Image 1 (tube, rainbow, N blue to C red):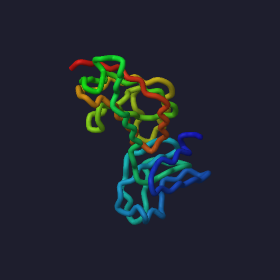
Image 2 (cartoon, helix red, strand yellow):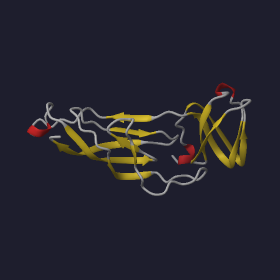
Image 3 (cartoon, helix red, strand yellow):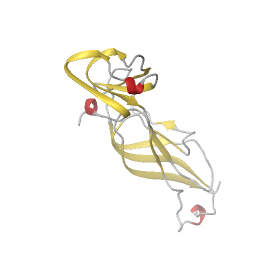
Image 4 (tube, helix red, strand yellow):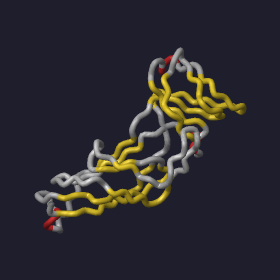
Length: 175
């Protein structure tokens, strides 16, 4: 499946045409709401639906529009029982996380959903230009968060695919 065919919005509508277009109608169920838009695989800036319609800033052949949502993953607290310094009664900090992903676009990771760090693979494309999905291992240094419940939160909030295959942790103990 190409990015242009991705459908990662709630209460969404898909528009397809052989002729490029930039006017969308029939969005009465989203009236007055801020919507996420994917046009030919490119994420556009959010827009507000007015009079059941949108006028896109670009021409496209395939458009998905709907309510945004977050794809969130949160690990259980990290505990290594055979390592005395990383038991349930010891404080730990996750220094970095290594995520193995396939077809992922902008990702964030952190010790909480309030303290996320963006994975910067390259410069993000401007609005209206399709982003190349990331494949393989992504290493993200996390903001410090010493505590007894060392865990990782991962978020992807664009109307794009996100497949997380595994999570590896670099943990410091004894704080």
